[in-house]
Amino acid sequence: MLGCDATLKIRIRVILHRRLVRQAVDRDDHEDFVKEVVVTGGAVPLAMVRKRAAGMAMMRAQVLLVHGFGQNRHAWHLPSRSFVNYLARRGFDVFNLDLRGHGRSRQLSRARARNVREYVEEDLPSALAEIAKNTENKPVFLIGHSLGGLVGYAAAPALRGRIAGLVTLGSPYHFARGSFELQAVAVAVKALRAARIRSVGAPVAMRAIASAMRTLRVMTDGPLPMPLRGWRPSAIEPHVLDEHLRLAFDYAGIDEMLAMFDWANAKRFGGEREDYVERFESLDIPLLVIAGDDDELAPPPSVRPAFVRSASLDKTFRSLPFGHVDMLVGRDAPRHMWPLVERWLLERTA
Image (cartoon, rainbow, N blue to C red):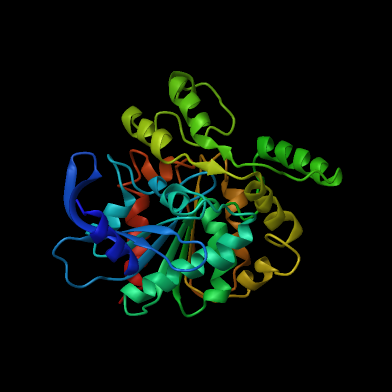
C-alpha cells in the first residue's frame, strides 16, 4: 500500500499504482497479471486500468476497451470472468477505459458528458495519447461494446494512423431496427423532439435499476418473455450476473440515448457541425462487426448496416447466438465470442 507522499509523486507520472495481482480469467482459471491504474492528461482526467500478463516481455499489440451506455469498465472485467484478463493472457497490452462520468473517471473528476461528442472528440483521443506514452506510439486496436462501438465509429476517422483496427460488439448502427419495442421508444423520442423537449438534470443512476433487477432476478432471468432484458435467460450464471449488475451498471445520460437515435436517423452524432456517419463510411480501416442473434437491445438488423455501408477493404461481420450482455460475460463467451475477437486481432498483428 502506498503512502500519501508516494501516491502524489506517482500521480505526476500519471500512474496511480502498479502491482502484481492474481485474478480469474474464467471462474477457477486464474493467472498473474501486472495491473496499473493510469490517468490521462487534459482538462478532464480519465482513468484506465492497464493489464499485462506477468513475465511476458513482448506484447502482441495494444487494445483499448470502451464500455457501453450506462456502464463502466466492469462490463469487460468481473471478479469471476474477465475478457480483459483473457486478452492480457494471450499477449495483448490491454487498457480498460472509464469514460468521463463513469467508474474511476467519475472519482477523478465530477465532469460528465454533456453530449456524446465529448466522448468522441476528447475522451478517446486523450486515452490514445496516454497509451502512446506507455507503448512507443504504436497503433491501438479499439474495441467498443454497444454505445462504445458507436463512439469508435465516430472517432476513428480523426484518429487515422493511431488505430490499427476497430471491433464493435452489439453496436446499433441503425438504432431500433429489428425491435418492435425499441421502435416504440423511437416514436416517443420523435414526439419529444417535435415538442422541443430536451433532457436536463443529473444522469440516471443505473445502479438503482440494477439493484431492483438483482432483487427480482427470478423474474428477470426466467424463461418468461421480458422485452429489452439485455441478456438471454440463463445465459449468465447467477453469481456472475450478480457481479455484473452490482459492478458494471453505472450512470446513464438521456442525451446519450438520444444520440443513438441521431446517429441512425439524422445522420449525425451530437450536433450539426460533424457528419460522423459519412466520414466513417468512407474510412478504410480493418473492421470487425459482431451482432448477437438474441440481442433485444441491438438486434442484427440494427448492427449489420455498419458492415454493409463501410468502405473498408478488410471488413468482417459475424452474428452469434448471444444477447447484449452475455456476449461479454456469459457462460459461452469465453469459448466462442472471446476467441473470435482474439483470432481477428492476431491475424492483423503479424
